[in-house]
Length: 407
Image (cartoon, rainbow, N blue to C red; front, side, top):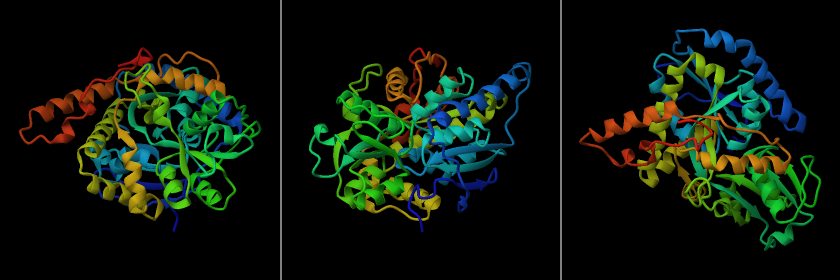
């Protein structure tokens, strides 16, 4: 059996109205690792499709729910809103007659390739691949419609590495070139005075590697460290003897967000053409997403760990060790706020890392449906005499696009 993310391209399909999850079916998921493919191919597809259909979409007065919603996410704890949203039926229940199909990815660039090619309609993803797609398509490919998770990303290294100065000449891993952790690693190394290159050269070598392989390579002594999301940071620490050199939350002082220590790890994006044609389906997806986030924030720790682990097992065939899932969940905040105020810095980090170009990202957010859903659900919770703590988190608060789109 495989561990989470040893199966980067699995698919599960469920029929509308049936909340019982089915076992995943395997398929190959294309992973673009070349710089040219990352910066050009998917965006060109998205731009061409958007331009060829945009006029017809704008002139279509009537919209209707989609027959099918194809949703992507990762087998990571940072994607727990997707994991429980699918496995516990929150998303499917709200979709009604719309069939839910899901595909599991290893990292963001591969998911964005699938979204831009029409293989999926929406996906949970890290912010940097979303920014890159928006920039390369001149704002025509995707919209960020919600946040999902903050935190849960660390640089873990061999115990003998004490400071950043010890990294010169070392080899580190990230999940995929241009992914959120890859950009974070390159940006941080740049601030330490190191030069890195997308081809792996420089003062510190960075090898984009699937997370399950990163664990094995570290255990075999072939990697000196990795900047990875949960549960992989915890697995490297607890199962491979790594230590934390950088917890990414310590790098965010709250500038732009007013929330020190918080940074977007996972967001929810949608193909713009799909959203224009099926706004009711996007709203239904958001209802399920908000319910999943509220469930995560209102459920006792032991039950939450059990349910998330069951979802990971359903995706990958094997559950995590209890200490791994417990440590992972402690490092993550689940939130529908995408922390839009952090995105100008994320863009600049991508520019400095060489994985995107300088651009205006105004318009990348459309949070209107999210704020409508949260307001309605919050009002319902307030009118419910049996309201529990799941109605009291930030899923009931209006979230801001920080001047980068609609809210």
